[in-house]
Length: 130
Image (tube, rainbow, N blue to C red; front, side, top):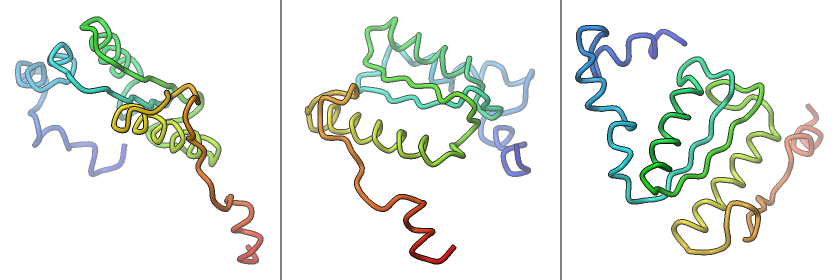
């Protein structure tokens, strides 16, 4: 992680192991059974900031409580996406999730119109001469 994130939780929550009760109290996993809205979790399998297991625990806890979770893991990605096709997929998944969860249309499986239209990175590069 970069310098900002390296001590971020110290001020926000506390320092382990002394503040482990505060960490547990503020953890989304602790409150998973209280979730009443759909949840979208997109995760890189090489994420060092939010370890994949941490996201899996949340997804499993929400599902165990009967919650609605869409979960997708991007292979070869960390905390954020480095490949344009994964950014495109994230945007399409997010749009589908919002259409389903907010507007009540289709599903994340592509049953609704979820295609993001616009120029590709390659076409922008060629039109800019780069």
